[in-house]
Image 1 (cartoon, rainbow over the protein chains, first blue to last red):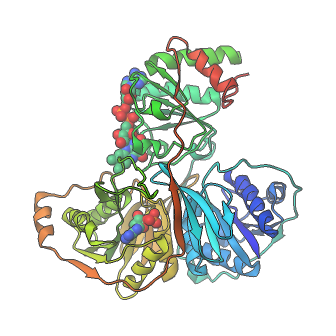
Image 2: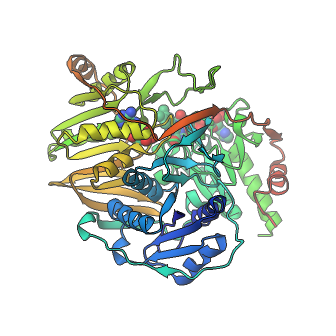
Image 3: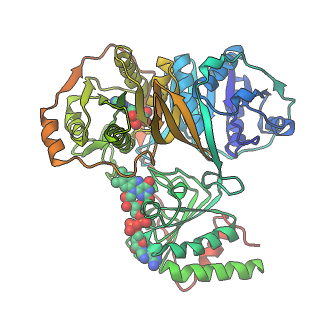
Length: 323
Length: 251
Ligand SMILES: Cc1cc2nc3c(=O)[nH]c(=O)nc-3n(C[C@H](O)[C@H](O)[C@H](O)COP(=O)(O)OP(=O)(O)OC[C@H]3O[C@@H](n4cnc5c(N)ncnc54)[C@H](O)[C@@H]3O)c2cc1C
Ligand SMILES: Nc1ncnc2c1ncn2[C@@H]1O[C@H](COP(=O)(O)O)[C@@H](O)[C@H]1O
């Protein structure tokens, strides 16, 4: 048997969750004394592929077929199933990303494997096999028995730290016998946010709510984010009002993020907003209302006016950084 | 064109969940709602049906759940769905839910199936993909926009680094998320009256065994109180973030 790790391709590069996923896959593989095998679809540079060995991949299988440039769910799942069959994969791992969430359940259905999404760590036991996840949008933890021999999981972001303990490996090139008529997805247009730090990838997120008062005031958040090397986010009313772009809306119905620092300015901390940010390592909040629920989940807080505190903070950072 | 909405019924998202003495989520006296993404999916389906340029002629709700969910199903009917089907089962995992849905869809003509990205209670993010996989039909996920173009669809898909517009044939299963419709539609007075007369078809389920089982539940440990810093000294907060929790680097 083996463990198969799906490593998605973002414009020829691996997104930041791939090293985490490979680190996780290797630790799981060690528990069963089997190989951790990476499947990397699409065209990708050799060194980028080889580097996954450092995170513990025993083997890296690259499938550089042009027909994989656009993700067709069924064709991708065919490719994964074919390789999973050849490699006798018993556990298949995906990221909790848009692509991972699209493909993992499809693959599970074909394998008649149990599927659990957003597991948060190594299994609590392997006989019986028990995994952990959060339910009720982060408000409750649960342990789940997985009853089938084959298993498919997506891994919640930041479940563990990526670590480089091993040597690079030589990638193997595979080609798949793709049945073209399985591919029905025709791409007409593509808009990428290249060059911009993605909210879901940022270590530091500076976020604003209705308490920021006016769209212009978000310039202060952008400035703070730039100084700290972070991305900006917002609450749903802020994006609904058009103060900020929809991609920045965090929460249950928006993006689910888990940065090292989530810095909330003028955000009340509604339960639906917290559902998207409560896995952050550290939460800091500035709010004029000492009773705001955000302070119940925050590690650090200031009761005060964001519009007064932000310029002072920016000044202080500039002084410390000598800019 | 016929659209089928897979609809999940969930506890109101603003409710604080407690555990019972047996360690199970306490569902007593909890208000139930339409899963937020499914409500948006239904809203979009109804918009398409009402648009004169479109060819959608029927919107059907499909729910797997006990009769106590009937009330929520009626509310969804009142938004304007033509028909509702409830499969009389209390699924123990997403596989069981998908199994019942697939059994129904195998016997029934459809063009487009819409599922939400996840149910806001157990956050399975599973049923849509499982159904597409089990039926082996084309699917697309992370969908934030749908338009019809003759017998094809234009679909906007969020990717992890942007968005794409795709052209896809029917039949199709689309897993939708926020953005698919602006605001959930409110049921109208007329809708409420009509819904009372409309029939909910109840179907007996086949036998199936779950692939997973909840072993136990646990509330997260209480968080230590928030460390408050005086508003006159924002620099101290930066200090703490840099030296105590080490999440920012200023030098
Ligand atoms: C089904 C459903 C799903 C939802 N999903 C989401 C979601 O995904 N994401 C989301 O964010 N919301 C979501 N919501 C909405 C959510 O319930 C809240 O309404 C929203 O998060 C509140 O946004 P806010 O904190 O910006 O605004 P408010 O709640 O209005 O809070 C503003 C805060 O700013 C403070 N303030 C005012 N002036 C200042 C100042 N000068 N300086 C500092 N602080 C100040 C106030 O004290 C207040 O606490 C959802 C709601 C529902 C029903
Ligand atoms: N009991 C159910 N009946 C019908 N559809 C469901 C049910 N549970 C989940 N779904 C659909 O599957 C989507 C994802 O839910 P889940 O996999 O439970 O997180 C939901 O948004 C619904 O569209």
